[in-house]
Image (tube, rainbow, N blue to C red):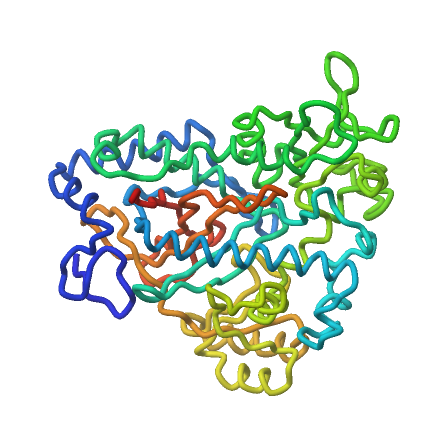
Length: 475
């Protein structure tokens, strides 16, 4: 492998030496037999297939189920780097929660002229039904995923905020379990912070957000849309690991002013519902009347203090990429501090001057839908054809408010294991954050997504990316 690259290589310095973070891993790797490593690589695929770690890719006709590609070279972060990241993440998540409270109450940030009213007035994720209501404990975003990218030794940027229903934590846990099963001697040699206690931390954090109606130990349940949902594996996995009940809408009903769950002993109240159902389908009496995925009347119980819904309805407005572009102002407004983790430079195509710049430079920029996710509906200018750019130009001109644009970043690379040895590929990182009245809890690690195709910048599994185990080194 040639370590020299214009991108920041997280394992190798420009002179070819191994960076300190990877010293322990490389000492181990260099003593291993290549054929044995190849067998282990195949073994990991078999393990994921047996466990059923798949996801759905939605095409034009129907969903296609695929195996999550896993790479066995870990992504390593030093204790010093992690301390810096956690401070920035905690600051940002706290600001997001304050922003959501403000947006559904006095809207001081809009009165102060720091963000425009159109951010919520034209946003389907902003819910009128949440105006004036404060969730139990004042927490809107119980589980948050902050997507980070790296461009240099001390250069980390926030690429995206996931405050609605961040997914992928089950892959973080399974990646670690797979690595520990395959290479126990490696973990004995290198001190790595644990992630396996995440489900216990999640259960504890959710229980701390229980509503006033709770009697005794809070009852936590995970609401899933069902087995055909792309993240069903994760829903079932987390419920099992937390010791919580996995429920569908048909298992729940409103009885005596509480949301109750069908059990062999009759109906029992649910105190905290970790829902993996979108707002629109949560309550057919309040939102989409055709929904069969939600619980009729749950919003009335919620507003009366009879249940905690995690994450709170209406948090999706914080995922909006137009809101993202204002996050530096949002962080400073609510914390009184400059952001410790900067945004990627962003052009709001709703602004006439910005739109002009974006249209003039489409071939060099990444353009994203304001409400898009999963790598869909975006243009990566440098890798797009002239036809794709031309077609996107028409969409952008017709509906500029629907898009933001960003420069094409020189994302850092981390090696993946190939038949020819180690090869650099671009990565990002999604740490998982738990928020409760007791504070902010960040699991040391997260989900590293990797673009398995040479030169690709798209790490989403739906677009051909894979995942890695993420190591945070002990002090």
